Length: 567
Image 1: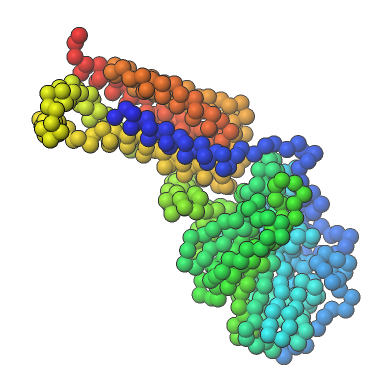
Image 2: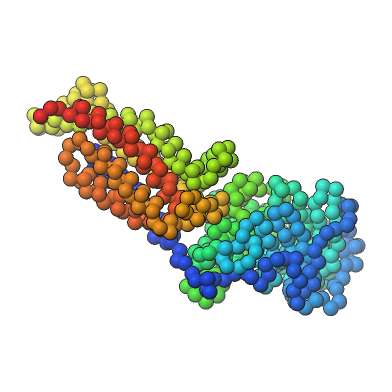
């Protein structure tokens, strides 16, 4: 039984070690090498090359419904720039309690989004910003049976509106070849819908099949102090209607390589460690037909650029969808729906169906305890570790007592094996020993369960700490951020020490077992090395769990001493 017990633990260790290899701890980068976005720390500042207008609409009428005749009269603006951010291009900023959106009249597309509640930690001043004039968050192309139009090069005329609910609407109109195009953005004031903007478009004189191509950002600027680690997490994610969400890291796309992901798709997004920008088809609308992913040029070993083009069919001259640009807050992403909370699929593709549900429940439990108990996440992780051990206490007690009975039966089992050489008679004698003692022959196998049951939660927490923004910047005693490694390595060493003490108490008054003794020394050392550079919150949870298991292990050792026959 002991060999099977420690073999199971060893296999669990290997699984975590492989995770560490596949997701190596990021290296720090000197501040002089950090890439920030200090050029445009505020969306409402004017630049030398563009004219910014902060939108404060005086209108109270609802968003206008644009007729085809009005669309046909909407022409190009004389003297406007041919590219967003160019000379003469006009930008309009719309401020909400959570974000500031900046739109350009050239291309009729959002240029950047400021996430007001989160500070950029990469060395750039001000809040986190998604996109920039040189890297807009969206760009449009129109494909029809007779022509193709790059809308990002066309200047549009802008009208503004505000409805009684406080929702703000920007409507851009222009002609593109033989077509009149209108694109409207509805920015809600409702904080429950924060970071979600609705997009409605209309194209006149268009025959089917016609398609809108939406180009996502080619990169996201780093927002964390560890810029290399942030760059390693750059990825495009997408959700097929009838399959699990998938994520493609920039690093897995070779320069110039193109990958076509067929639809129908619910959403497509670009993300880094903590922030995401995604386009989402309406729940009752037209899903995206496909997305083409392309690898970008590389100036270093880490891929920082790629491209994603999302295709949506234009039906009856109209298209509609939503976009989300903001933090990867678990509860907020769940409220968006359409499985957008799977934008970071937990577990690799072959383990996603197992790991993601566990990780999602763990996050929900942590958030619930944080909100209900009004405690910091450090204490919440400690409470979770203790609760896991308390829940497993009855099972541990039962299996450990079965283990004691198995040890008492060893002399009788050995005697039966020695007395009967015939395999059939030997098996019958062994079963009689188990039956008389009231012990299941499979008790040895079930003895491994108490050690294995906490492992899925630990494994899920490994993925949770990769991108759960709720832990970002959360201090706890000497830790300035529980989402990164302990700078003094106190918690990993304490975790290893608590694991060794747990093993040492477990071996007291037990029959001599050289293999168990060796693993009692080796396993804590190996786990310390594996978790040394992982998130300090993960080490905090595992340390709390080990310490919470000490009383039960001590009681078991005392009971084993009482049952040990006198020599």
